[in-house]
Each structure stands twice: as structure tokens, then as C-alpha cells.
Length: 360
Image (cartoon, helix red, strand yellow):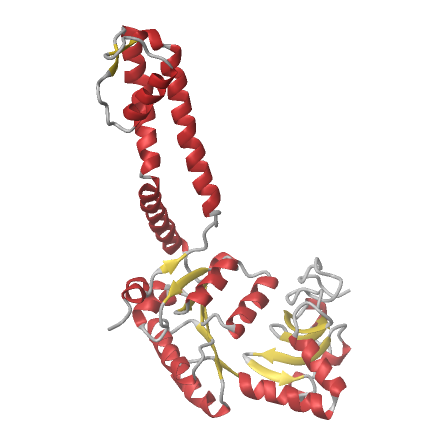
């Protein structure tokens, strides 16, 4: 029989929330309750002549404390009661609201849970309304976190990223990173629908198993035929299967790591350079940028950036390919540049350059 809690929360959208210390919340409530008690005791004691005590006719400090506790708790034994018009008005317009506030504090936990659920429902509804052309990341393990970190460091908006993962650990990690999470198995279409896959612009799939990747890719493609799907697989043999399932790009994680290990063994320096290219924020990075107007007609080797490939009409050409001996309008360049340069910047050191300038 499936775990009731898991079944209940499967597919739910979880938005990152502001965490407050439970000790602070408890202390705040206790202090507020004592504040209401103290204020009411002072109010009764100040107007003690307007109250009557059936036992001795006088109201002292102990009687004020006693009257306050039985009144705020709605017990009301009736042995002490307001007798003057002023005391009765104070009870009607001051102590009665204080009684309500005190009762709210007594049941504050329930009220807070209900309020939090209402706020969460409102936040999720607002999130669904504005979520469009977003990025869905299926699986928030090491690969998923690295992909999100790379995107965010390159200017991608966190609010446009939705994580899908059944793990409570992934849920905590994603919330700590400020991301919205849909808890559940991405091989289920209902879970993907809750993540808004049908309106997503891009989907990254990084599950722990290749068969789950295939099934997730099929479901994503059926819900959204137009989104761009990037999938990671463990085994090279499964690449064609994932492509046939609808993935636009497939990355083989185990083979990539194996090649890097082999290069590092044969040539430690070459391995260091490759690791440098794959590491964000340090040394060198591979980036893609648009071709500038003044660069049209030039050879890739003559540009300030180190061009390693040219993208023309959706096809990737090596920089030495005769088909791209002269660069043409609409080409995109794959370059190696310093890590501090933005990947979409025209060229190192000239981020503000006008890309429509004519040649001199």
C-alpha cells in the first residue's frame, strides 16, 4: 500500500518560502499573550472602583488578575462583574476585542496552518497564471543543480525555472536555491502538467535511470511538441533511443567523464584545460554569440575571439570547414573566451558595442 503522505503530496507545486524560526514564533506568541493579560489586568486595576466582588465587595490586584484570566478565557464565573457604566463600556469595547485576540492566540497554530495553506494556494494560482515559456528541470541531483547554476550565473531568471523531482532531499535543495518545485515522478503526465510542461520553452531531463529518461522524454514531447528538450543519459547505447523519443540534444554523462579521465591520464595539462572549459566562473569558457556586422565576410581565424565552430542554418561547422571560410549574416559563433566575459557579449571587453554598426 503506498505511503499516504507520499500519495497526498504527489504532483503538488511547492514554491520557495521564507523560513522563520519556530522558537521565534513561539516566543512572539507567548510575549503577545502576556502583553494582553498584563494590559487587561492594568485596565481592570485602574478602574477597580467600577467592579463589584460578591465575596467582600472590593477588588484588589489579585482580584484583577483573577477577573482578567477568567474573562479572557471566557470562563466567567460571575463573582466579579463590572457595575459602573464606564467599566461596562470598557468591557464591551476594549476587553471583548482583547478576549477575541487572546483566543486567536490560543488557537494560533490552527489559524496559522489554515492561513498558510490559503496563502500557498494563492501563490500557486498566481504562479500558474504568469508561468509561460519557462524552463522545466526534471531531476535535481548533481547534474540538475549544475545545469540550473550555470543558467542562473548566465542571467537566467530563477522565477522562470520549475524543478520536478520526487525526492524530499531535492525538494529541500531546490527551495534553498529559491526555485519552485513540483513533487512527483516525471514519468507521470499529471505531474508534468502541474509543472506547466505544455507551456514550457525548454526542458532539461536528468533522471537517475535511462529508462526513466526515455519515458519522461516521450511524455514531455507529447505534451509539448515545440519545446527544446535536453536529456542526459548514462550509457552511450541509449542515445539513439532518447533521440527517437523526442530529445533535441542528448548528453552522455558517463562517457564524458570517462573521456576526461582518459585525457587527464594521457596528458595532465590537456585534462586541466578541458576541466577549465567545463568549470564555470574561472579561466576559460566556451560561449556562443552572434556575428557582428563588421565581422561579415571575414575568416573565423581573423576574429578577436578564438572561434572553434560556426553555426549556419542550424548546422555546426568547424572553424576550418571550407563552407565557412567567409562569415555571413545570420551566423553564430562558438568561441573560447575568458570566464568573466558574458557568453552573449559581442567580444571581450566591449559588452556595450553596437552590433549594427557599419564597417568603416
